[in-house]
Length: 376
Image (spheres, rainbow, N blue to C red):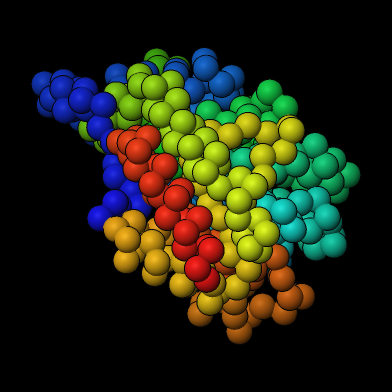
């Protein structure tokens, strides 16, 4: 059975984690953490980076930095993981769910604009599958209405919008290094701060509401409780694991994009007349090889296709269930039908994509998908 995902190890992770065992700092914000921060800040031009224990924690820090008040509204895609919404609900905001676009699961300016009210404070975008939302139009809306923009860049390592790295465009951004992502620390994430206003407070929130980071840099002679916060920073073991992955980023990215292209070569122009939709990469966006998906016309077709693949030794998976109609939120939702979100929820299938998947396996999976579609 070919699994849907297999976490990849470069071979250096254990050696770096052993270094941590013999170091003076294991608890976090040590040498490996600083290396990771510097990598992202130098390679992608992020203003400030802070590793976190998960992408969820990074989103929660984003929400805390937005300083929301009761009654404030935050526009969030319905087609996303629950963390995107929960982070802002925990701060007391009202979440307003936006629909996806017709050609991709991403939200658009057209799906966001009707939801903006005088109470709106933040727009959250998710770059689904590492493919950029149309950010110029969304940023124009935000500027017009004096709103903050948060990028949920969980899928988006090493992907770009008009030459700009995803995660560098909004005021704040959150990345994930979960084992299913392109690079991983098992569980992990990162807050990116692009607006100078939030830099100092982000460090305080990261360090349990204290100014300990300034103390370690010699900026103050003692540290104390300054603000709210939590223990968001990961241990040095997580950072050491991540550093090994970052050293191999170009190799990992090249392999993942190769697999993506093999799938696309097998399926593009072959499945569309069966009602199957394939990923769209707009001219303004790049493909980072995070995910290859197809969208079936109905839930029934998807179920049958996934079963066909499983019977032939391939594990596929679907993705998000709409948040607006979830068990937790459905009794609170009072907005319009989100038809595109529902369509992706019923139809989207993710194919296996991981570093060690061979060219032959990718080609075989593409052939099986085509056979399965033809038999449905």
